[in-house]
Image (spheres, rainbow, N blue to C red):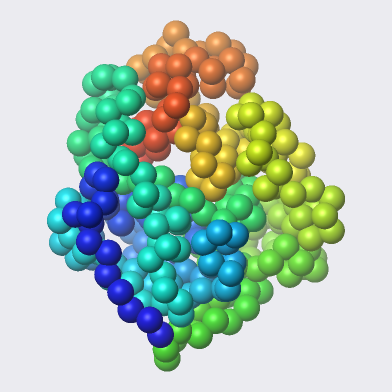
Length: 308
């Protein structure tokens, strides 16, 4: 096992591990004490978070088990990690530690709601999750609270994922497309996936057989990329936007979920243009097109946690 530390003060902008991992954008990390999503105003904590990550081209060529916790503040704290490999490049990738957060937020419009959200969760960053687990996570997200979505992904890992050892602990990788494609609808329903079970099985089959590859979207213009992802069963525009934003690096994507539609209704009613595509373009323009997804994620978490 390797160990290391990352000085938050060396990053371009603040960083809050708890807010980043408990804000409803990633469901692939377990909190060691079991209290993930137990509190709405989750920020500034020092719990350990754990995950297993399959090889990522240009980042790591081997599967890795990783544990990380934050000690100290969002400006001058330390990220302590333990892993089966040198995890600094991997954490930099997954947690977007290479983003200049101050510059990104400065580039968004001076809107009072955004300012309140930024102040409430200073240091929250977007995630850069592996695409297949991210896709499955958000297929499971329809009409679900974040804690239940997280529970579904944990059960998928524990039931079908490969075991990966780290020191004296054993962790579970997210199931591969082939492993999920081999499951029956009834087996997946037994893990409380409900009506999402056939969507998960069929989407995994599409990826496993090469019928469709979610990574193809990464090389397309934004709206074409969103359309590309809707080929997968159970993926509409909102789920596609989540995958684009939280995995594939389309920082302009704004998933129009219930919270953001309520935000539009209450704060920016002129952005409601009827269709998903037209409303999406309008709110992206209001939030500043290049980094609208960052603004969306802060607003989503701030309002979901009862900010106002």
